[in-house]
Picture: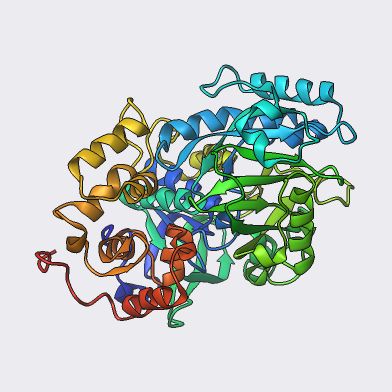
Length: 523
């Protein structure tokens, strides 16, 4: 386990007034986890609660990119793009195992945007973030480029530019692990059900969503990082109205069998002036997304609609030589983004993806996080704690841009050198399995492989390249409690396992993976 502070024993939580903290972060998505990490590293006594699994909702339902947001240039959001491009470099430095460069091909369609506009936008994109480590953009002739072979023959010209891929749910969990290892208390599957605000502190009631147990904590301040539930937490739980408008927007993605063999991704211009990505995904698949649809209802119940599936298929079929249809879709997912809207625009696409922080100090402080995106989560956390630290004490110095996330200390030689070293030390690992483990865990992979000399010594084989040792590691160190946690957030192995194999994971986890691995009974 991550220690009693990181996974606080249940018995004390059954007692009233069972904890006193400097800061309680409500919401275990990327913003909440990032703030908890930053706060713990500043010496504050921090707790984080999340009603589901860590990264359960919006943060694991993204397009999985660390990017500046090329299309935001059309809305003149130069500040947001610059901030995101600068952060792209920082995150690539602190998490080189779960974040890596990717090149995107944009075929040119004259009727949608003139070539000069795209060239100008890419020039800005290359330079707004300073001189970064990624290759700059360039024009290409599609017929002579490997990415052109999958496209319609009438598409002649295109552009290539760089951004980064991220294992989104793992980014959340790694921030939470680092927070816990720095002293934070992390409660997953724990809902904030009441918050009484007083002059000097908050009295907060928390409830386990597993067994319904309730306990009380006191905290000097609260961060409301509840994502799509941000207004509900203010209005219903906290008992005071939000001062900001939050619009819920659903973004959906579809996954289909791999549509091309190369490692380039595509960004397609659509007739509604949005863009749609088609990205190599989990070796055998292509990820296509996303939509922007206004949403009402419970964000936890968001699903991809047939109309969105049709929209995404139609969008890529304007470009690919071989068409894809709803029957080809093997998996879908949808997430609800809480967009902060100060404009009068009713367009979901036009609403800013930038964040806003609202600090209310009329009594005990509450800081509300509105909006945001994966790429800027760390910068958001720094700004949040720069505002809260003077009120709470602790070290006011920002530090998170210099310290690697867990597993990210792979060395200056880079990921390929780290992977080669891993394969030398564990030569019995299949090549694709070694790559996946290195990409998911970085140097923390030793917690899974240490002491093993063969695949058999990793314990029960569930299917694909998932073995009992990995599931044990995830349950003991990463708060995974269900097969869904393991197969769809900590990894995406649900795409590789049959329904029977997925049920086997669920059953064995429900029974506590009772049988120890060979030679590990004393662990």
